[in-house]
Length: 273
Image 1 (cartoon, rainbow, N blue to C red):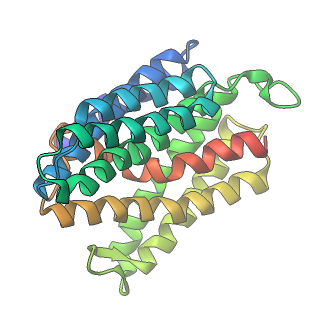
Image 2 (cartoon, rainbow, N blue to C red):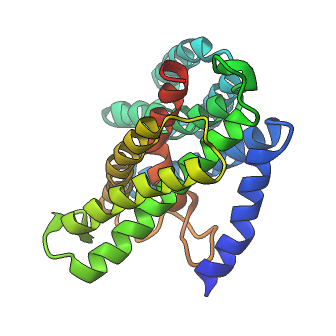
């Protein structure tokens, strides 16, 4: 019941920011998710007795999302370079135990790359103008993101129910014993079907072959993102990354698949639309 109530509240908020006339609501929502995700990631690191430079990570995360928001993704290289330099410099002058400096700097930078950079790609999609395509497409960004979210969600749903019904062969036993190869196949089929449904309902401008290909790719990549986050949690010895969503766990538990799939939809929008 908690999971259902959380979805009833969260989904309308997400869709409102996606379809709103201003893209900045979505950018703000993404930034909140990034900061919470970074907090949870650094908390996982602390479980392994890895100290992280949280302030530097938060500031870099804000800067990365800002680069996507103002359509200046080329500046992200400068942000990451600055983060690496500042992180190493901070360790030079404040390291208490130099044997842990490598882990400190690595975890600090990885958090920004894993969460802020990948999530920020969705902001880049939200900032697309309707004139981005050869023939102007009304609400292009909203249609593309809604299709994307539908594919990711249906991947999880399809994999869950297919796995329960016919799952026999384990996908990654050590990381997530419940996931099966059969479930994964059901997941990417469900993602492709979700894409086709979105095309028929509200996004006729997207090519059928494109939407099927996107669904298949997202259906494959999404579960890997889920498994990657599960690996981090198991390594840290925790069940959930946090408890911000009743019945769902933490922010990373909710966006793990989205993070891995975000570059897929971002670069599709740049290269193929």
